[in-house]
Length: 73
Image 1 (cartoon, one colour):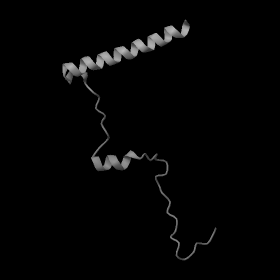
Image 2 (tube, rainbow, N blue to C red):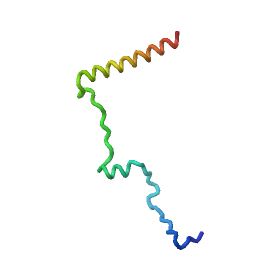
Image 3 (cartoon, helix red, strand yellow):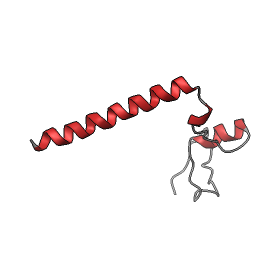
Image 4 (spheres, rainbow, N blue to C red):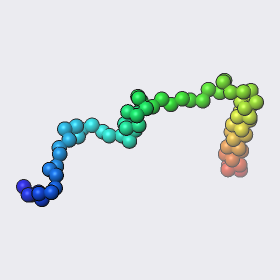
């Protein structure tokens, strides 16, 4: 065994090496529990915003369909 220098602290063995550490553990301890993801509920949004969202989604679908159709032509 290699002799340690007198000022070098002895190596501590962690008894819980088998546990996987995630970067969110410390944040969860601070926040008081596991993180909760809240999804956007579209029915709670104003009618104008929903219409704009549906329009943008529809235009994107049309562009994708147009790209697929024109790629075969």
